[in-house]
Length: 270
Image: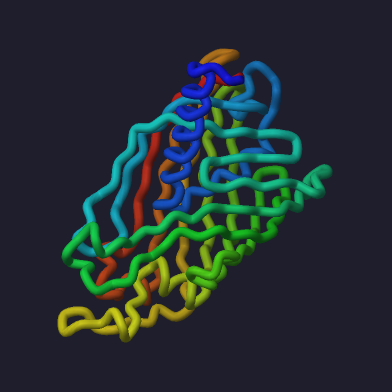
């Protein structure tokens, strides 16, 4: 029978995983291309295997009257030959040879609006979390990593879909990685309305007219960096900005033209 200490350790690990998962739910930083750079070499800035550590993360809130968000929490990520886990999302490569990788993709998208949390959003329906599944591909060029994925809600909450088209430009110098990236996020009308500012007739009021975002196209830019301190420790940093589609920007409940997020992390390599 498991000891009390073992049970507490498992419980803490589970809470750490869930806490880490909450971060990307608020931002669209996607570190998926990093697994193509992972190596078990002792100086690699993207090590293979399990990394356990902590992260400080913060950024802009999406909706009117919401405050900027900030976290300081523990968590873990994993880079394997065919499986990758990054907090709220995971992928499994069913084909990975030379420059091309094809994978199945899954994500937990957490809810981002609860009218009980803010009087300014009273009358809105709660935006619940959902499970998403899809497929994607990576293709490595000499100086760039091309990525594309499509995914869909499989729980019936938003009933929406999204597609990401992304290019990373990795620069690796010994134990340092600097990787700028840019891309476009395309969201279906149902996805955008549910999570990015739609207001149904049922939710409309005298001060909050109904709003249909329609399908949206939003450009994104990011900068990811990692530094291998030694064989056992690694530091990472990431910044990301999404410029909202005009139909999201103009929603009566959206407070910014886009979203900016940044984070710093320190991890132990197992």
